[in-house]
Amino acid sequence: MNQLNLKTKGIIFDLQRFSVHDGPGIRTIVFLKGCPLACRWCSNPESQPRDIQLMYIPQNCMECKKCLEACPTGAIDFHLPYRINHNKCNQCGKCLEVCYCNALNMAGSLQTVEAVLKELAKDTLHYRRSGGGITLSGGEPLAQPEFAEELLKACKAKGWHTAIETTAYTSEDALKRVLPWVDLVLLDIKHIDPYKHKEYIGQTNEIILKNCKIIAESGTQTIIRIPIIPDFNDNSADLQAIAEFAQGLKVIKEIHILPYHPLGQNKYEYLGYAYKMKEVKTPEKDAMMYLKKAIEECGLLCKIGGVS
Image 1 (cartoon, rainbow, N blue to C red):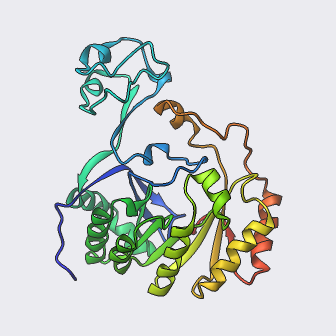
Image 2 (image 1 turned 90 degrees about the horizontal axis):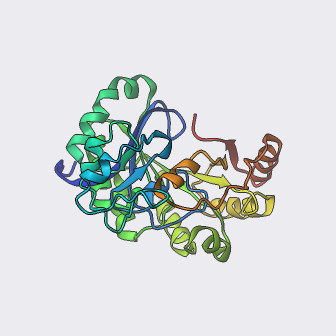
């Protein structure tokens, strides 16, 4: 085992315990900030920027204006619909100290590997009894490759099962430095067509497909996960194209399809972002079963939802 650097720092925005859908057994998910993609349906929009952000939750606000008085940079502006001028905010947190109704929250915090490991260790018993472990998600965990590598190394030193949920949109160097410490890759593939991929996600998929082959060549257990988005990829042709690509990787045995949901919509409001999926409905069960069958016709196991 390489020497651990427990003082390595990274920015995380959430830590979710008792997950059973992001790897085997009971798991703790560590959500890292930063993502090079901009999926229209992203349920964690606060994960996309690398920097820490201030979020405003309007239904909690009591209009006391103590935050206005506390802000040293003039970033709090009650004339703005979402109260925060992000160009002026320096994330000092002084407004949070006086916001007793929890209308202001900071999305993200700078943490050391040591501090995160201490939190993860609280669930050691659950990992051992269930065969669970740690999953790094985001955002894109490989957007912080040094922190991801050191955290995964530290988890492996504890004997915990490790997984990453990744878009594979990263550098080859970042991917190769992290893969040796990963037991399971949950690999998100949204579409094979590069032009449609860019239209909905902001980037083409050449880097993703190239890195998929690197992951396959590493021999790491990999499950492909496909978010099912109406009018984007909710048809048998698009899913079978992904399944055929997966077959060409030789090591993929399983694909999970995840129905679109609008559960992150409120976060867009809290950040002052526009939500572009307001008219989109969650796919019906029958539609998901049809798509599941389309993938299975290609000779791969298919599940609706995550690992369980």
